[in-house]
Length: 363
Image (cartoon, rainbow, N blue to C red; front, side, top):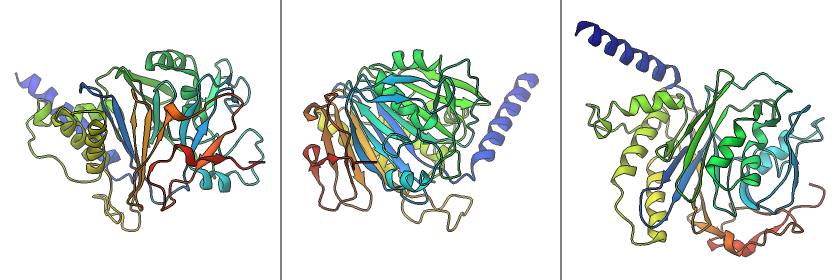
């Protein structure tokens, strides 16, 4: 008995130590998948940072020739599916200015969010614990900047994407003098889901419909272990944490996801999930428990995707309007150009499918 108690205490101490390592990190973003209601499969995410990136929503047609940007043994492909993506466009333009690399493109690199025409969606979030593998040219490589594009361009289901990613190396690359540590969540219209992290140079994949919430540090197994300390998930802690730390957001999102009522239709399902992503969004000026002062990381935008109806919703936080793109009305034909939209325009509201313009010539 005493041995079991000691092991339990050591396990709890280890979990607490893991949480403390990451609690002061000023990184944010949340992803929530609702795949248990009868009306829709809906996923939402928030984008939190200390500054905006001049994001553009981009339409990618089929037939775009791509390569992984990883140098020798880079993956090459031609996009099989058209998609909608969110790109930190203005940041990428500045970061790539004068770059010696001819492979980088501000409209292709650094996609952080998107959904393809088959309803497969993908999201990149910050994970400080990420440690990319040392390059092994015997494996086909794709940089983390084109990781999301590779998934949306080529696959229809989570299973197909996961199977392919097991054979691929995700490669580190600098942008604007910084390497961004990232992890990925993907889901499809069946409700299947996967969380993919790169820990100590190894790709770790959590594949299953039960993986519905992702925030930031600590790594996913530690987040799940921490969640079990709360009453809703079998533990003893009743009061939910109210802070903006990744662990707090993970617990609140997971708990409230279990209590959502059955929606009457798909529109209401989207609204309910949007209510959850708002609950874990970070207000302007809010600081972490570490008291970061000037280092606040507010939510700059939120998105939601109805994976069965193929509708992508977006809200720029400083605007009061929600806008959406109906993928069923987008022409993804291979001969079409890449098109973009600045979602920060104050006059945008509702269905903006027809408001996209061709990407600048010579981009």
